[in-house]
Image (cartoon, rainbow, N blue to C red; front, side, top):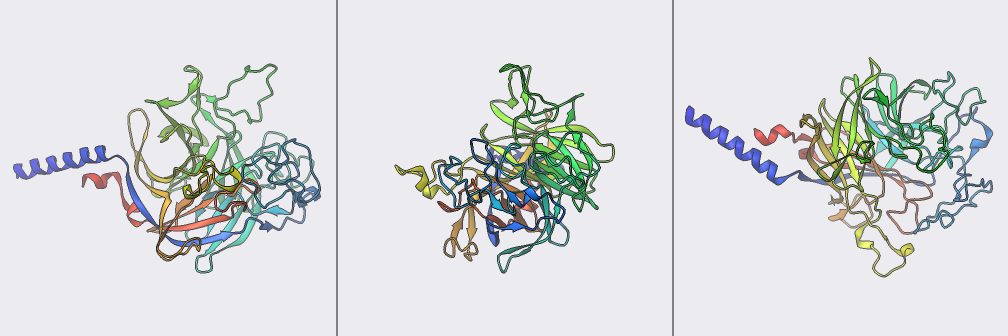
Length: 457
């Protein structure tokens, strides 16, 4: 018995050190479903929406002057290396910019639309909304069951909005930048990137709550926080959260008690006069928000593989285990990288790292860092049946977008991933074509099942 115990301890020790030496394990993903919302899709506006919202994208020219003529602003005007086929402004509100997803028990999902065209200044005519969607994987389609437009008739937001003088007070990209969404009963929680803020709404989009990021006895703010006034001289102000790098991601505990909003990029450390890092590697923070007490509590740290990376979505698949998208800023397949060609004919900065990591909030070191357990590579996906129709059967499929921004578990062996197609700007799939909204279903059974404990049992 003593010998058996000794051998078991030795085996566990061997497995432990083997695990440490091997680092984070990679698992292969298989494409089993592919569905698309075309880039030029639009949604029907509410009947009581202000008239000027019938046309969107009027403020996207770099000179910041309004353009009212449809299609007057081209991709070339916007200074991108690869001109897309989408011109602005456009009639109606676009069905694009999916920046967060939550799969529901019946297999449908809620998907959140971001602020519109990338900044508060150029998006006052982009309505904020989330969609209840259904996947038809056989037909390769995404069906929109319902669109809920965010509105604030009870003046929950403590600052002036673009539609302040209207009764319904529909919100636009000048007010918030929604990037993540969670559902607790009949309540929706949204993570905002500007403030950063947490916003609560009902399933029809009516705001019912608003919280700023209060942590360590102070409010952490970005330059876009509603209380910030322009400095009287350059260099006068410093900020905790980087511009447009707020709550890009937000998970929820299975019981709905806690939200876990996650910043997209590192926080500024005023003492060291630098962004937070550990042993030469940048890290981002995950905060814990108690939905009953309505207060922030603990925080966790997530190490980035490179200081130029960012995180774009986070969902828990159990009380401690979560999925995180980490990505670089490149776009386009490496096979079409520029090699003496002009940037409008190739990808000058092709995608190099687009991954879904599995992390363990229950395996946190003394310094607060979460453990990365495993990952799948979105630039190396098996497509044995040629479902994407982009390449032949048995070939590799890549998801080389600048902004893969949504991930959640679909069932016991699959996850769903989608991109933010950045209407008018992103061209990561085909040269000269604006990216569509692509949704991919990946078979990753072993990846979902693996736990830190599995390495020791």
